Length: 224
Image (cartoon, rainbow, N blue to C red):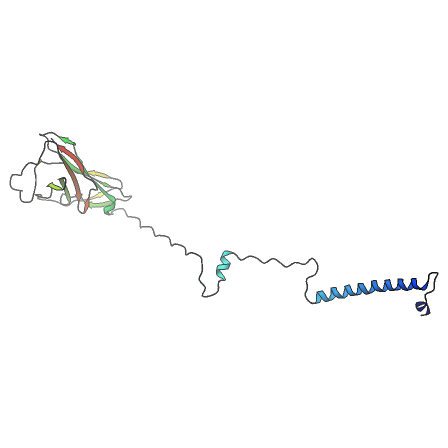
């Protein structure tokens, strides 16, 4: 104990006291650092080098699924697919939109001694075979000029018959031609002489129909 209070050595006592104070200060500093580290870990502070784990970003699907009840989703509703039309069966009745009628004349210009030969083509433009009444009772051929009707195959028809015909997909039929005698018809002139229509370069149009189906366009011809 006397050596602690009264250092013995070749140096002066003050030197030994300063050395002791320096060593004591280092010891105290180390103790304080240890205490701070222990206290810091105890209260949940992260240790050196420790980082928070990254939070996964929610996907679009999970975000939509976690929306609170009663909230309105901002996502646009998906348009429902338009149901396709059912395929037409072979042998069914022809739909009007699959039958195309075209008026037919044998010439475009007729001399004074020639009677126009008129007919029609009937085409099934669908992808299935179908049947249609193509009898003379259903066919009608009409001749007009301007806005005026001059002749119709229905005006004095007698003995019209029904004829159910099956048209294959893509098939086209042509009706037998009939001669127009270049007269003006009406239901009141069936048993009387009919007046001749104007010729000398006059233009006329032929339009055709079958039942409720009509040709989309007429065909023009000229009578000399």
